[in-house]
Length: 263
Image (cartoon, rainbow, N blue to C red; front, side):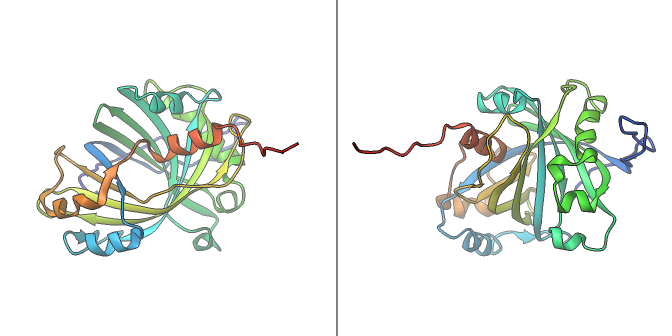
């Protein structure tokens, strides 16, 4: 158990379309309900903000820092993107996440990943996590084209109600995360930097490399107020107009600028 998240067993195996057991669910992490707030970091160097934040709150003792890889699933008509982009009060995201660099999976046949169903009702967020193992070769080469990754999205609708039946891997987003914990408010905090969209799949989105323009400071806890410990840093924090997935989808959907020729 980490941060009060309970564990429960899942069914032993999920077959692929041919009946072969390509995905082995291991266990489920129970629903977590928190208030989540995100801020843009106004410091020119996000690493400086990380160093400053460490003077006010504690580093996460178990997972202080690391690489986060996330595949976002969506419908072919981008329903999840549209719900978030238009600010629907209730919305759902499905994603596959793993916490390692590609080089760290060398010599491994399978990589531990987490299939996550994230729901938001206003500012209240709930999340269920299903621990799975996915082929290391697939994650290291073309994860958005992996049969295992595709099959996980197709099976997500059977895990919880209200999830679209047809989900496909849409974007691969990667970033570096530093984690912190406030001992007074029991809030969890994270600073994300070097955020990039390193892959897209399907015909819904054009392909061109993108990076997020600022670092992101994220706080998860029981209160909607900024923890006392980090209030001295409010001058470095600004409003985030959209999350990572919505930002990259919006950028990719923009028509490319055409060169203007004179004469």
